[in-house]
Image (cartoon, rainbow, N blue to C red; front, side, top):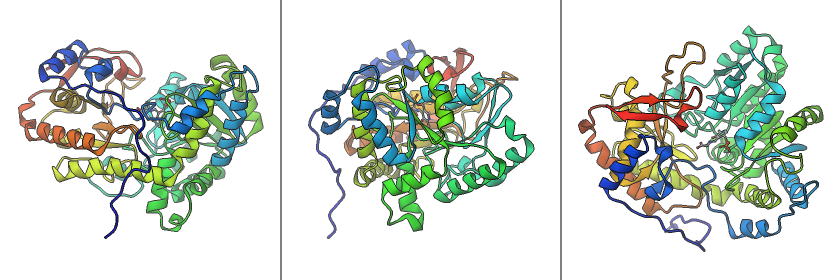
Length: 458
Ligand code: F0G
């Protein structure tokens, strides 16, 4: 008999989490204006708001932290990180930043101006925010299959080469400072991009003389999917796959809070020294000197170690299998989820879950609220609230997908927690007819509104 699967680590330290009553949660969510970002973490039992910065560091990372070199310039921690980034990505130049969006800010300050067009596969919200804030336009070139949660496609993060080529053909190259490929694609459900697609994008970009950058927060999970779904990569290691992926890009932005399993940090990786020089000025202005950016020496040390652990196959397998375990449990209950399951999260299709709630009443947010009230589980809406208003018409944008994301922090919860989540969601699903109305917005910021939006139940 084959041995069952188990995590390649054991637990050395634990943190207490608290249950609460339904009554408590009804009161708390009302006080939070029905925005789950406003809840205190102690009001949450299982926190699936994000997999970002919420992972558990290893004993090796904690010991690396103790050896951080806090010199303002030229610290050994910087050089250790530089060496690891070079080994894993192949990029010669790098700039540390305090997190992913800071890397976007520095890079886009260097590259993007008003009127520019930035094609990609469903840009992440902060990425799109940084593009639109500069009065440029993000154009989504994701394949159509990604927008139907019931269709199976192994690489729903892929860009449609025809859609991309149309953008490149219809606009002068001077207006397209870069193409951004998000690996894995968070906004379409943690879906991977195939190596073949990365090669296609690279070829097209070369043909039209455009740069390609990867938004790489979950590049290792993407590499895992290439290894397990793209036949010719079956025997390659995760690191070999990652190196090949990055060989098709001019640079990368990284939120280290995801696949590098640290609680804070980010960086930009670059191939071109000229671009590195230009970006360095913005890094110094916004983040810090180029050998620490927004990070302390100890954080850079933990990050260097985390990059190694995050690209270990056995770790990735246990991580992605845990996400799939939750997905399977939900599927058994007939709960409509994005398939195939994502790398970092399961995405519940709120439109199919509650078809009776109109899009104007934000079904995904409504479901996230109900799940919190039912069991103290915090999730996040990836739908019309997050999509913001159109910057020109100011009308609400209703994206193809209206999802609730159950993001699984790395090395944090056990499958018992996943069971609680699955059953809680089933209980909401069984009584979904009782949810008669959704929510309406009472207060919102002009951009990135989901973080601070205030809502009322209808
Ligand atoms: N790119 C992607 C694909 C992301 O998922 C995120 C963050 C960022 C960039 C920005 O990085 O948070 O370090 O500034 N995603 C988090 C999430 C917040 O919950 O998915 P950051």
